[in-house]
Image (cartoon, rainbow, N blue to C red; front, side, top):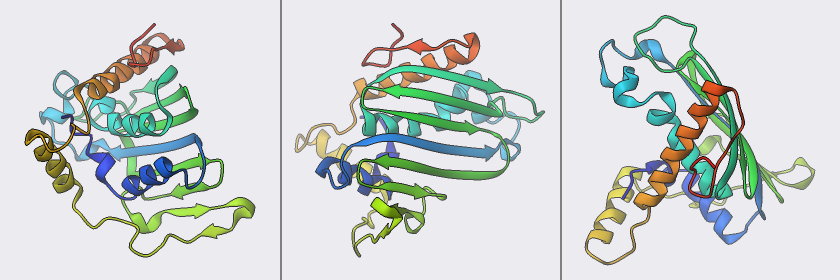
Length: 218
């Protein structure tokens, strides 16, 4: 089982449920940003070294890319740009911007370690609603707007209070005992790794990289 624990965090967990039940119709677009201050990472720490962490997209952004794959299915192409301007201990990119074309939607992603203030938010576009959050891990920050711009209230008790890591481990143990299927397979993890590789290839070449349903370059 691959530890894409973001699937267990609220409000993502609830949003996936809404998608499965078709509450707001089909999701067709997204914009997500997750930037951090790389100056807080100590020199020599394994996260700071691309040889050990792989870079920002492998260490951080791969979770958001997994989220987008959950919403929109297999990717078809990516185009990405990155910059490294600031002097700091981490070898992470200061800024990386990605455009993704999926089989069932389009998305933009912005990440990197060059921000003086950390920010993490998203906008999700569905046929029947727009979901907006300026603090992705704060479930109270999620606002849902329906046709005409009226805010849709989120029912009391909709969110799970289970700790996301505990929920992840519970599902893993259930799979080990043969009580359930593995919820996040190695194949899914490999597809996300392949997608990150395609994105980094695009940052190096400046080209649009076409990928197959497993995220591998075509």
